[in-house]
Length: 173
Image (cartoon, rainbow, N blue to C red; front, side, top):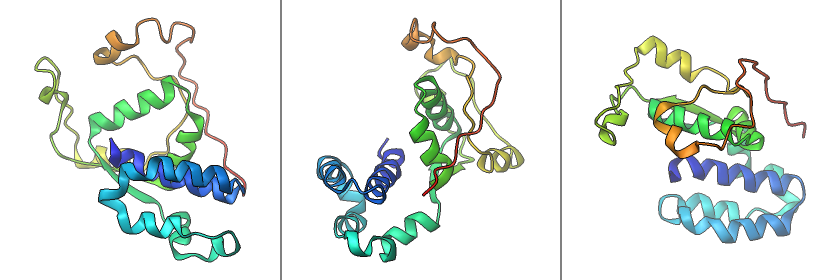
């Protein structure tokens, strides 16, 4: 989970700084940075030292804004993440994923079988993985995943299922 949350944390923090919400950004940083301290100590120190006067010139800021963060994720985890984001209509997070994170779907044969013996495997060919990795995330209603139906009974009854795809708006800075 922290693999996915760390880049979201960083970009949320940087967006707050760019939009001049410095005190809220500092509160956000102090509240959540400890969750990532073990794996990302050096980057967190650099992020904590960002200053208003030199924000756009700082190497750590430039790195995150000019390069996409590569996130290695299994096919099943990727589907679950998209389903969760779209079910909850988390447009801000979808925007962060589209603009700043490059999903690298792993070709590992990891499946739901590790958690549920009755689940079917999710094998992908190299070509399918390449196509998934280069796809932009679009806002659309996903079909209900059978393995999640028990968890969400009644949560999405208010929404109609649709195949309409609406690209997310770009953030103008």
